Length: 215
Picture 1 (tube, rainbow, N blue to C red):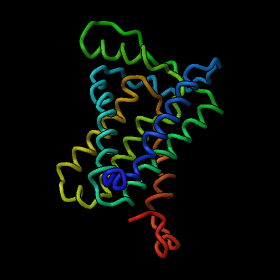
Picture 2 (picture 1 turned 30 degrees about the vertical axis):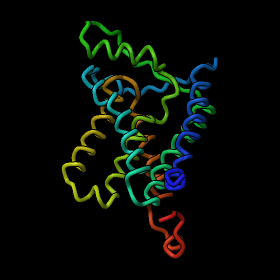
Picture 3 (picture 1 turned 120 degrees about the vertical axis):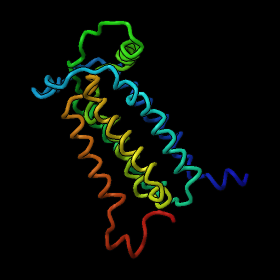
């Protein structure tokens, strides 16, 4: 019972996770013609199968970050800043995908049988080239990187900060070098991060007098 009371604030994670995955599955399966997003500059970005490694590390990166701020970080304010950022961004992604069905046509014909190519083939099979704007891989990575850099404990460990920044950069690069996203998706994800940062991290006079988050 004490554990349930101590971590009662984390209930929002599984509840929202179920809602998000259900909505995303619907968007992936609905029968609509997507608007193809394609910039000329996308054609000049080469395909590189080795970026599948940081692309897949994204799942562990997001999970570990959320777990840390949920159970090991003392500040509930920082927990809510991260969770609300992720929640707002992912919800807006669902809304955009519903209103503006979108996709891309950048995926190359894969040749070879290396482990990296096989992993990309598997990725292409399970993840359709639709509902790409903005890139959730990019948005969530930048959101988690921001949370880590704003954390007082993390700032005492420059190697951790450097590793987090490097992984975030590699994940962002992976989205375009694996031909999973266009540059438009990446730019849109950064713009959405700026919007959420202004909402949940930027200090406002009214919030300084009466904090919006629990400390």
